[in-house]
Image 1 (tube, rainbow, N blue to C red):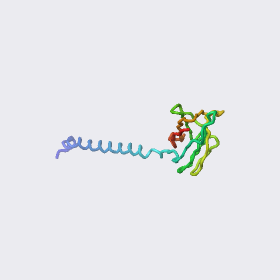
Image 2 (image 1 turned 60 degrees about the horizontal axis):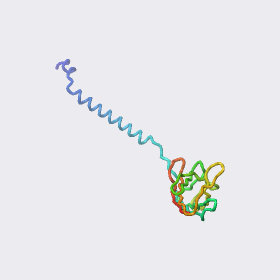
Image 3 (image 1 turned 45 degrees about the vertical axis):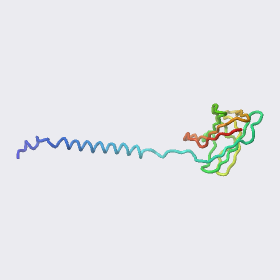
Image 4 (image 1 turned 180 degrees about the vertical axis):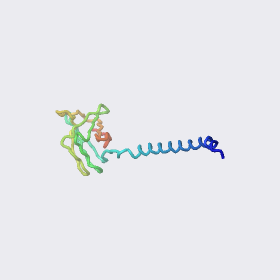
Length: 154
């Protein structure tokens, strides 16, 4: 046997390099997929609640309307202005944020009344007339997810 011939023979080099490259690519892909799947934290979710929102009588001559919010089930809802937004649009118009007033947290079985006033430093009445359809959205600020979306006819 000629040693020089043995070391110069490279017939099996190409398949071995191909197998090594395929194994390396597989390991890199598995690491990339694993880090993307397991690297994500748990997703935040908005509180889940069944809210019944109704008109509470007819609007006053000045346009002040009151709604009744009843919590029928699910998570308690914190109505702090930094936690939850209440958005109102009248007859499909622009949305305005409503001040939660004295409502802090509402839990199962609670019924609260809310005057529809904006969130400015001197809350102004958002004028609603009898016959208007008002869309009310309750939105969780942290997740920007909708908690409740109701259309009410006054």
